[in-house]
Length: 396
View 1 (cartoon, rainbow, N blue to C red):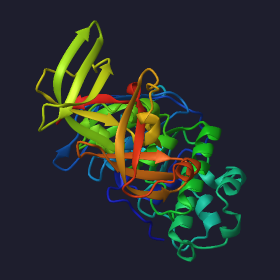
View 2 (cartoon, helix red, strand yellow):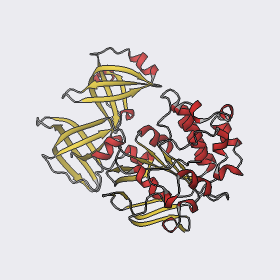
View 3 (cartoon, rainbow, N blue to C red):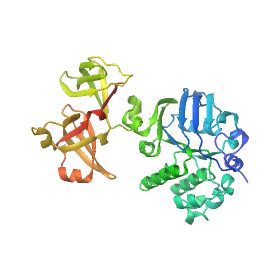
View 4 (cartoon, rainbow, N blue to C red):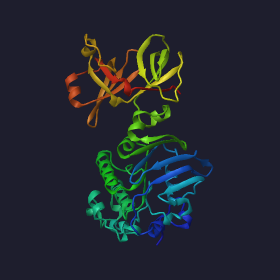
């Protein structure tokens, strides 16, 4: 029998041989600590990274293709040697262990199922030989495919089988490389929810790779944003998505509104700052921002700055509400806008608008809001956003 192999076989073992020799004993959730870890492929090498996961947490690595996400997974699995630093899983230093001794479940981005074996035999290989696979079969709806071979399955079905094999047998750490990439777009939300429930239920420490911000936001207890081997930001999903640390991170986590403006006036009182912002080409104020600046951001009048706000934090309302004598609620900014286009995106409607100074603004609305406003392209509307949901980033 010829084993399928990864691009870099662990210490002479093919991928399937590694799976076969994985420790059969049941593991328990373990903490994961990366201390000054550097990883690399060929001449490329990452910057040092420090990360920490509590037992049972899921860390999502978010970044573009080529950011070093999959290479980091291969380093955690032992397929690539760490260039520097430590990988501690519980009390064990993984760098000192062969891949087959690490008790890790790995779902590869590339297909590594035995093509001539049935689904059941694939799942019973290695750790799955003595494991109770019924809960996974139920959760991933695999019962009807047990007698099929991989070539009889769709790409999405093979992904489900590969996911089950990574989770079978209670590994201490699970590595998932783009687990939803081959799933049909219509089926992806349901499988995303299933995967989130599985990880919560099994409380297995997990590192998951994706370039899809929606996957990161819904699956990660913590999110680490990677760009060319550099860790730009790491924190809770809420913190990373609501407060990206810089413009690169904002693009990667899908911030829709990034308005480049010029600081016209700036007044500080303790940690509180008030700023008048204008279009970069005109000295006329268009926005008044107030709040606490990020510690790494130092501003002066005349300087360009990026105002970041997620589309889901903007509430569309009738323009008449802005034109009335009733002032906006405290801490709320109201912006006049013109609707360019509206379209349905899943359960929400996306409104693409133009602000008076020419910049584009994007907002989301519930279907009943869209129906109530009854807006057509070219209509005026009001966009409301809380000041606490708008934050400033360095322009470049």
